[in-house]
Image 1 (tube, helix red, strand yellow):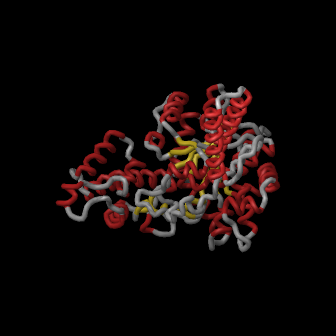
Image 2 (cartoon, one colour; image 1 turned 90 degrees about the vertical axis):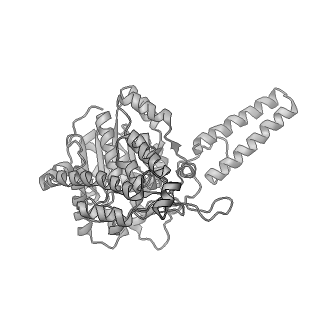
Image 3 (cartoon, one colour; image 1 turned 120 degrees about the horizontal axis):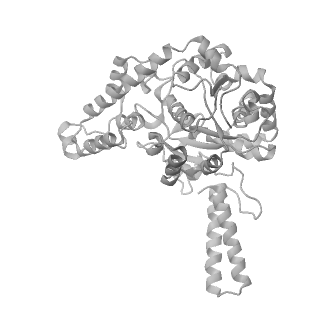
Length: 465
C-alpha cells in the first residue's frame, strides 16, 4: 500500500467514526471504529514519518528513510539507493519490504493481464517472472492509452566505463519491448555529468564512455525513427527548454529535501546537490521541443531499476507544483553479481560480471569459476537433498534470459530434486549466454559513428501522440 492509499484509508475511517457518532451508534461500535482509526494513524506515521493531518495528503517523498533501522531494531535492513545496493540475504533484496518502504505498488497478476489485454501482446518474461515487480501509476497510463492518449518512454544509463555488463541490458531489453508493443517514442539519457561528479574521471572520459555505451544501447535494436539518445554534457548546452525545466525543478526542491532523499552531506560538492534536477527533467515532454513541440502534458513512463526511484519520488513531488503530469514508473529487481545476490554487479570488478565484450571462453570460465552455487558439497548429497534454486546465481541468470517458461520450471524442478547437478546447470547458462553475447557483439559491430550521431542528434521523431 502506498502512502497516498493509506492516507485515503485513514480519511475514510475518520469519516466513518464521525458518521457513527452523529448517528448515536452503539458505544461498542464507535469504540471499535476509533480503535481502527488510531491503528491506521500509527501505520501512517510508521510509513511516512509524519503524523496524519486531515487535508494534508503525503508528498511523494513522505516515505520513511530508505536505509534507517527497522522499527524492531533489526540491523539487517537492505541498503538501496542510487549509489549502493547491498543485503545480507543470499536470496537478494526483500522486494516486498522495499515496496512498502518506497511507497510504490506491486506489479500483480491483474496488472500483467491488463498490459497483455491493452497491448495485445504476450507479456514480456520480465513481467511474467516478477523481474519488473513494482510500479507507480501504471494503471493511469493504461487508462489514458485505452482512450487513445499515448505516452513516451524515458530511461537512462550512467556511463562509468567503456564496457557494459549484461545487468545493464535489463532496462533496455524491457524498454525496447515496451516501445515495440505500444509503438511510442523513447528518450535515453546518458548521465556523463553525473559520473564526472561522483567518480574520479575526466570530463572527456565520461563523454567518451557515453558514446561507447550508446553503441551497446543501439545494438539492443531500438527504432532510430522513434528513439533519441542524448548526453547531458551535450544536450544541456544546446536546448534551452531542457535547462529551463532543470531550473524550475531546482527552485522547488530544498537542500534539506535532497539531503533527506539522497543522503548528501555538507562535504558533497554542489554539483551533486543540484544533479537530481537534471535526471528529473526528461520526465517532462516539453524538455524535448524537437520531439513534442511545446506540449508539456504528455505522460512519461520510466522503466528503471528500483534504486533510481528516489530521483523520481522527488520528480513526482515537484511535477504538480510546476504544472506538469507526474511520470509513471516500472521498477526492476537487481541483476545479481556472479558471487551472489547480496550485491548488484559492478563494472569495476571484471569477475563480478559477464561483460558484453567477453569471449565465449571468458563467459564459460567466469560462470564455472565464479557463479555462486546453491548445490550441495558432494554429488551424493546433491542427488539426495537437491539444490537451492533461490540462491543459485546460474538459475537466477536463466530467469532473466531463458525465454521458455516451461523449460525454466523444469530446470528448477530438476535442480531442486537433485536430478540436475550444479555443473549441468552452469552448462545450460553458458549455452544461453554465449550466443546471446555473440549476437550482441555482432550487432554492435554494425553500429558506426555515423549511426550514433543520428541517434544523438536532436530531431523530430516518427510517432502519433
